[in-house]
Amino acid sequence: MPGKNISKAALLSPNEVTLREELRADVQKLAGEIGERNMWHYAKLNAAADFIEDSFSRGGLHPRRDSYEIRGQACHNIEAEIPGQPQGAAVSSGALASAKAASPPLIILIGAHYDSVFGSPGANDNGSGVAAMLALARRFAEKTTQHTVRFVAFVNEEPPHFLGGDMGSFVYASRCKARGDKISAMISLETIGYFSDAPRSQAYPSPGLGLLYPRVGNFIGFVSNVHSRTLLRRVVALFRKHAKIPSEGAALPSFIPGVSWSDQWSFWRCGYPGIMVTDTAPFRYPHYHSASDTPDKLDYDRFTLVVSGMEKVIEDLDKL
Ligand SMILES: [Zn+2]
Image (cartoon, rainbow, N blue to C red; front, side, top):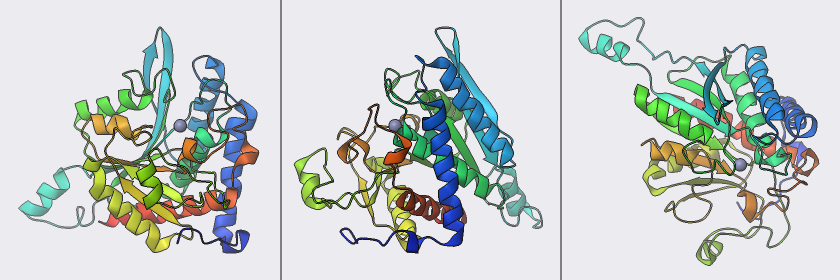
């Protein structure tokens, strides 16, 4: 229902109010306290990694570092996993059941990059995605899932690593492929906290898309390449079933500007289906990649509705 205003706080349940304050605190920690975090601000990059690792641990998870080096400096992706428990694997018998039990569960992977671009504290890009990923990890730590659900904070998404071999997610996805990890869905949480009800607050990379999609930036976007369209449609349908915020989905050729602009690209390159959840970043957010991308710019109520909707999406994806 694009164009429809939501009356904000009234729509948040008590659980969502709790979630909102977690999101606010983690964005403040990453962008307000730690600030710009990248290879030029290497101590801050590592402070962010330590914070993420500690957050996973406090949530009852067992984080692991997936590390590599750039010119002698260590860089770390941080991952934490809820091991899948396929239904019936423990109690059933017979050849078919044991064959099923022998194959490891498929993996749903929720990722967000934790570095910020040069010159920016990165509150929305991508403190928002990391805060959401951590909040979801805390909630799934208390659930039993059939799929293995893996949460990963990626290092070095921003230039000069962007869409290159030393991008954290590309190193990570390549290792998944080499190990033979069976990832059935990669969901990249990328800049998800800014919304506007102003007329013409939403722009697009091409005029054609502007005719097809809303001109008011009050929705959350789901974007994929054409190859991942089945996953995209499934996720959008599940999100719309539950969420209290408008959404738009688009499976597009990856050459259209913006479509491949985050960690889902790395997974596409390694043959995995992946989608990006985004407020569309440069096509809406006036503070994109600037020093003014600070925690106060986010709309925490609507950001919360995105994350609580995604919790339901992952629960439902797990049942498919
Ligand atoms: Zn980003």
